[in-house]
Length: 249
Ligand SMILES: NC(=O)c1ccc[n+]([C@@H]2O[C@H](COP(=O)([O-])OP(=O)(O)OC[C@H]3O[C@@H](n4cnc5c(N)ncnc54)[C@H](O)[C@@H]3O)[C@@H](O)[C@H]2O)c1
Image (tube, rainbow, N blue to C red):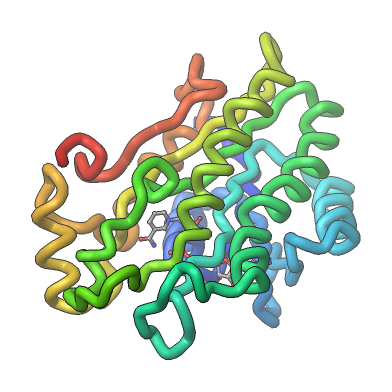
């Protein structure tokens, strides 16, 4: 397989870290963007909602390197509030709503804009947007809380809005690059097991065909395949890897 240069946002989170280590083992060049203060080769501290920072980082990477693939992976998936309490939608703050949507919607737009300038010069490139099953179905609040107080829930809503937005972004953007070697696709991923509460895990497992959550690292090989030239004829498409969560009621 031809060696690819891959740029991933949110590289220090659960999926990002696992994917970076996986790619490094395959001796692939992976350029990383995240908010954290880290000194590491090919790591760039950057807030992807800040246009100047994004422009600077992508220009600095592309001066010396080609970029074959961009993975828009950074996101904010907050609980309703830091104390993890149930909340009433009608009390939810506009400030949180905007803040939690911004990384997916504004961040992915900005990173894509500057990466696509590089792709246009190269006449090829691929964007992989990382969405979630919650971009297609709303979270069942019963998974998160057994409390039945009227009109209350636990899982925030803007995550669903942000992830649905990425699906629309994928499809609409792909059309700008019709019949070119620049492709844009989207992954719709199911939940990864990361020390969930026992009750949540039992309920989540019962709601999908595989009867389990994904393991950390389980998506790496699949994402790697879609980074490669072997994955063709897929631009504008969504790839579902969800253990069948979206296949049953
Ligand atoms: N973990 C899951 O179960 C799951 C399931 C389905 C989809 N996803 C999707 O996979 C992707 C990665 O999920 P994860 O679980 O690794 O999330 P995570 O919260 O562990 O990591 C997200 C990373 O994004 C970074 N980030 C946040 N705001 C940023 C900004 N403004 N600029 C740069 N970096 C920023 C964070 O610092 C963090 O390291 C997300 O898009 C998420 O929606 C995750």
